[in-house]
Image 1 (cartoon, one colour):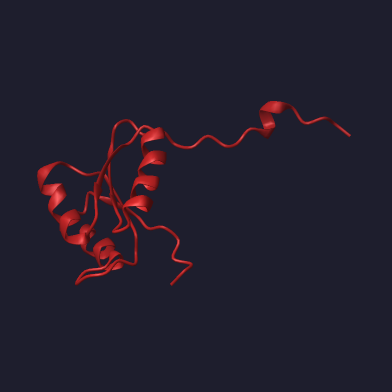
Image 2: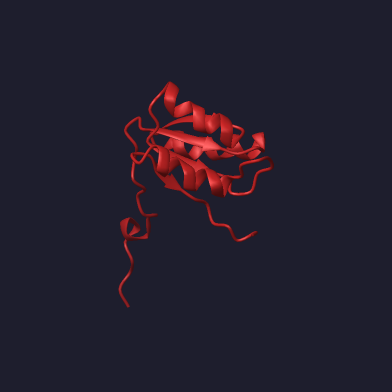
Length: 103
């Protein structure tokens, strides 16, 4: 049996950002702030919104590269609708949807 080297047991490297702007949307402030940290740690700039309507206004104020949104939020527009609407309005923004296992 051959021993496994330490380098082969390391966790895979994640893609690093280069200051791209990620818009993180969640009505729960604690969860939203928890989502911000990994993006910043990976080199992305994170901006926050606590509601879909606020999130739709932000790209007009500054360019956004990626949208990361909670799917279940109260109000007239929920996260899934936001994730569908953003690419229609701004096709250059990529959308990252978290797993919806709780739906």
